[in-house]
Length: 277
Image 1: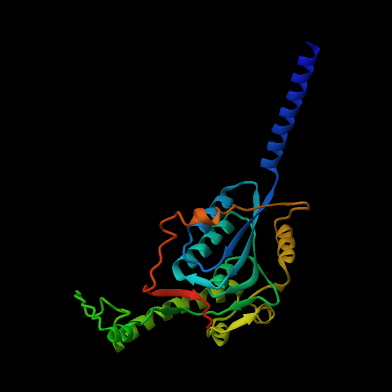
Image 2 (image 1 turned 45 degrees about the vertical axis):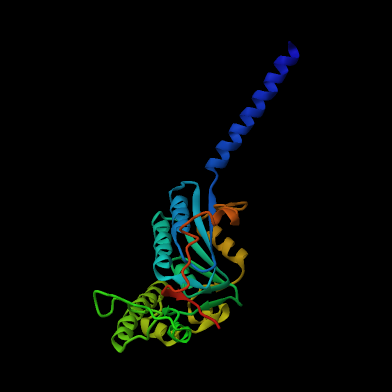
């Protein structure tokens, strides 16, 4: 009887210990990490995660780790807007520019309160690009014609099966300029650099982190520890601090998403993206 009573006491103490641990863990202030990696083709996973962290009362700040050459204009801006919403909850955001944080990667990082760049990161590439394959010569060579019935003169603009007309080129260039002007405006406003000064280096060129620092595109040079320490200070926390991040699905499960698996080699791309040969 005594052994059973002692066993129940031990089990009770273990249970109380577990409950206390869970309670403490839920109330302990944390800092969140979101990693933007690879080409930005879709924003859903990023924006949902950032919004969830914004609503979590135990999350006191966000570390944005960028290792991306950029990507689609719309998903890039959606990530930027999600970070702005996070900041609206009065929580600081620090961005760390890792190996590559160019074009759309830099665009998203501009939403942060503070930017740390590795001195040898590749960043910059401020600009907009439209590209699509042109296969007319190949089709002529193999003797294939494409028949197109359209409702308007430019309905099949950027078709890979014919050359652009002068009018169509002007239409696409206008779209490029709108995206470019938006990018320049984001950099100017977020980094407090006059537009005229941004225009002097916003020609698509790539910078190292050290060069970006001299231009005012980043606040300091350092590594990820520099960024972590800065966020802890901005969030007014003391060490040790817990960093949390949403775990990714295993790679083979990601391909079960039909939306993420779509790929069309002939599609037109309108991107904030660094392009290297």
